[in-house]
Image (cartoon, rainbow, N blue to C red; front, top):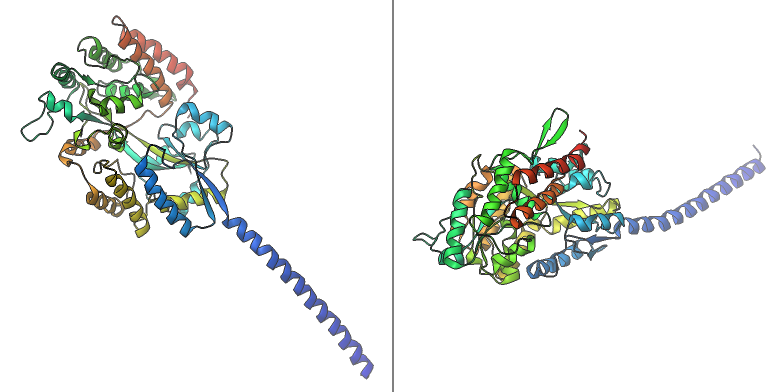
Length: 473
């Protein structure tokens, strides 16, 4: 072949090589310029944290200062925006409708069946599996947070209602044994008699009975179950109310008797959640239904001595003993992005609300308990564990034991019995049920001639037509 042929071919090869080289440079520049932008977008995220402690929770705020520091070190590109939100049915809907829910927030176990179908909660199945929650949560609790096979929430804690005793009033009334432990009522009849003794010996109310903001109905269901009440039951394919059942009527008559026959209640008949803390914490009432998860509130808000608090099992009724089981769920707003939900799960691990048994999780639990002890708040009684991992539960118990600062003998009866008689809250429209029952309680507390049966018959019709008739399974 001629020299000219070779020269022409080499020129063609050179041109092609040059073009390939230039194309490579252009592509390289494009890749270099695009990669950092995508990386920054995936790493930089802000989350509004509704589970941030409220202003009156000094121990919680101090613990969260440390959590925030630890979180920033581990995840510098995730910004935490404090947006503390205390759940209530009245405030939730306006916030949800306006898109103003925090990315992560607390609610009650009764609420997911309303929140999820309404589209306000994010499906977190992928993240629950990624971070190991799906296999670690008590299955009975997980059912409450699952809808159509998808997970929409995780539990913060569970609780079992018990009977709080004000030891200051029990001592004044002579209701303690030689060891200083309370002589507590084991049946509702005994509770009425014990309340009378407190009233006679101290001049203070023997028992706290709420009647508004759904709190009265909540407490009433716990009482009425032991009288034989069954508020909701499935008959065939339909859910039917039982508000006017003989057991419910007997329980409402008992509440009426506490007011008019035994005269052991507070003069104010419109009482709610915050009122029990006030009256119990200031030695104005001897007994109230509550759970160990709120034991710090009378001490924190009213400077009550932690040593004046005792908790015993809820009393038995004619038809048995039932301990209402409820709890607090953590949910995620449906307008959260995948990056925000993932960031929320990272936060849960840093604050110790995860099933892990690692140094980070246990350190976070210790931070919280250490701050409570430093503030003089009670440490010892635990909420109902939500994990099935025994190693996790035992590790947490060991930390609690380290910081326990109360006389556990005052809580032993509760822990010996309460978890043997657990009964979950009613499955449908529980908060609406409580609201309707509030009205029933108000009637018998304000009208000496009120007829519990007629009141509950009317209430039952309302609950059936307005709520249970809507249930479709």
